[in-house]
Image 1 (tube, rainbow, N blue to C red):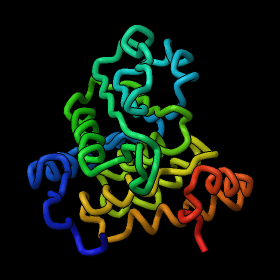
Image 2: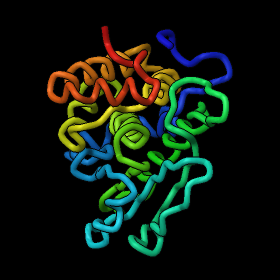
Image 3: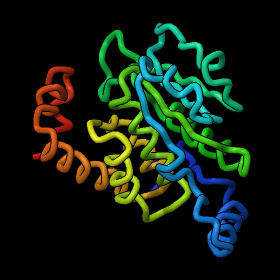
Length: 219
């Protein structure tokens, strides 16, 4: 990361130059919703999903373990679009665990493209994992910065407001930084976010260590 897409990884946006022109035109026309803003994105864990029955959710991104039971999102929320990704919430290659790969983050970006393509027929965008702390918050930050290069810090600031106690999966953010060609800006924004989280919720440091992710703690 830091010098654009790595070999074998293609940059993912919203359809190249034509997509960028569309976004620019929307902004020029006063469309403040030219990207999935925090007012539309909701983050939660599996136990909280049912509470959004009447929230007007139209798009759902689920991230659960490879063998986890799939929550009945279609029955509870009846979304227009629902994507399910299966991987463990780890940041290193551990035996017996299937962590996030480039393909998973590409699927997150494809979900963002689907949301954009479905305008204006979008309501709330629900992003969830098991607890609503790591995989889902990483995905939400990626989605919020996907269509707006230079908005990385703003995306994490918004994430802090939407889900104050969170610790985004750094492996996912690293892949997204490369795929989006952000040259380390997304990673830098994550580190600043981590420091802010630890200032406000110092107890999270012990939780991070307890799941074998102490290396993510900033110096």
